[in-house]
Image (cartoon, helix red, strand yellow):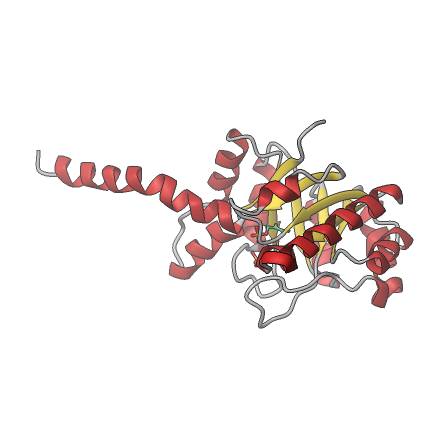
Length: 242
Ligand SMILES: CC(=O)[C@@H](O)[C@H](O)COP(=O)(O)O
Ligand SMILES: NCC(=O)COP(=O)(O)O
């Protein structure tokens, strides 16, 4: 059976850049490196408060990504207009809370059927494939089907945070939800909070098409790249007086 695809979320390259208000590290460069390493797609979350990825990043990435862009965004008129102007391959609609550190829960599609149907239709009409970031809950999966979203992304954050028996149960819930959604004809992605010690069980779920993973990959990149980064700087200093 084919492996799940990997979408690499590069939000936290922009988080690091914005923390200093400088021009590096550059998300466009991160996307290119991720693609060269085998990423099947690049994910960015254009938050309403622009805390990491900016409008400029989205514009440049849309021109330079060689695989496909998955634009995560809230279901607002402003974001819908940006998506239609940008035309990423995918839009993933996510809930947003201003004060949250990262996305906390899934989108309540069942609680806003009319609005969800309208936004999905607008994006579908623009040729964008829409995914809904939802909890592993049959009510939300039914709602995703009802509003004509072709894709869902199952929120793995609760599984990622849980431990012991609670994690076993969260995994079983994700497995069941993936089966249920695939049987309804939805394409099933998953993501959030996945890291080097909890991804394997999710990647083994046969119904999952693609995993979106960001924070853990960017965090590991610091350590896998730190040796060379220090050696490069040492080299510049040593060469300076020669
Ligand atoms: C929707 C999702 O699970 C993540 O992509 C998350 O929204 C990333 O956003 P942050 O990078 O701001 O945590
Ligand atoms: N949709 C999930 C995503 O893009 C990556 O989330 P994380 O790995 O940064 O938690």
